[in-house]
Length: 226
Image (tube, rainbow, N blue to C red; front, side, top):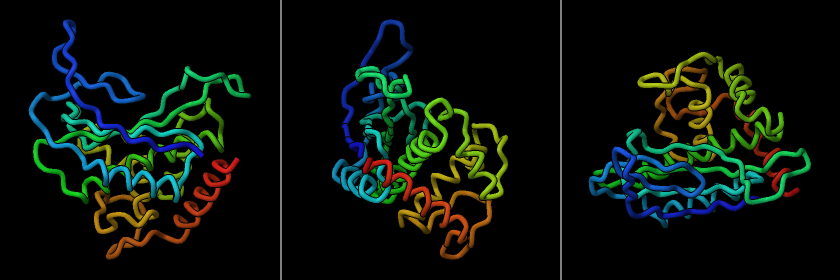
């Protein structure tokens, strides 16, 4: 089972060839940030969420959760990615292993705990997608979206939605990450999508969606034990 490690990223880096300050999350590229003084997510809350997620939805890879002290210039609440870990030996398939990376942006105003719960679990849902893609299709297919296509078919979603302003919430990977929130029992009253078959009211996932997630969590737990 991989570890879920939480890091507070402090300080600003100013480069002669950059047009503004950056911060360096663990496992990610230099991230442009706004130098305006900010609040960051509560570390104790993020660490508690990390422990719960590791227990309920373990991935067989390490995950670095980076809490920025400044606001990412993308102006999003956070983001997730994965990167090859060249510090270790190649694995049996001849490729390097990977590590998950989550970045939680600072905000100019105080951060409500519900936002921390929502964003942390949502971004971890993306890492779950990466892990499932590797388990079911191999590392070479992790960026070709086989899990997203499968999920789009399950939820009746479009597969050709562009990533951008007022469209990203329509993407299968974003719907999947927010379905993961419901599976984890976190912030169920909030649903920012108007797509896909889902019951309204208490936002209870359809039986076929819950069945998909039960199989997914079973696969993750089995791989993490191995």
